[in-house]
Length: 160
Image 1 (tube, rainbow, N blue to C red):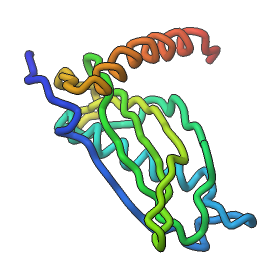
Image 2 (image 1 turned 90 degrees about the vertical axis):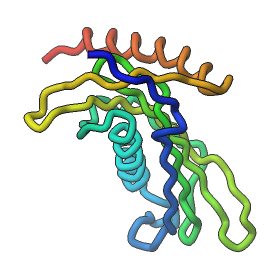
Image 3 (image 1 turned 45 degrees about the vertical axis):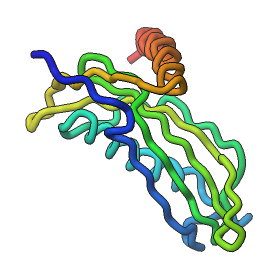
Image 4 (image 1 turned 90 degrees about the horizontal axis):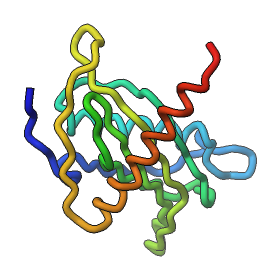
């Protein structure tokens, strides 16, 4: 089956939320697990939009924390599909913090995840190919091929 290619912008997702006390540690910064939850949810929306299917998280490839997000700041997340395989998709999530009083923003993290599109029985299904347009999209698409090869090598080394 041949699927119509999609552009990254067609499935991009943005999300914002305010960081509340229950989400923070004793230092007044957001728990890493809270950030991971946000990242997984927004990435799954982008993957589902791209594939038009239900999706499952196959791999949380990386999450690099660059700076903390503090109590009362706004967390901003942007998810975009960077690469597609036959049934899988790589999603990049950029995380920012915003001071709601000054509007100042800073990048606080970046994450890469892999999702697989599945049918109602949980079997993998084909996804549309990705058609990157901008130089930045093309750059991430090329880098994603290396990340996909690295994921495959890593899985082959697992001992079960």
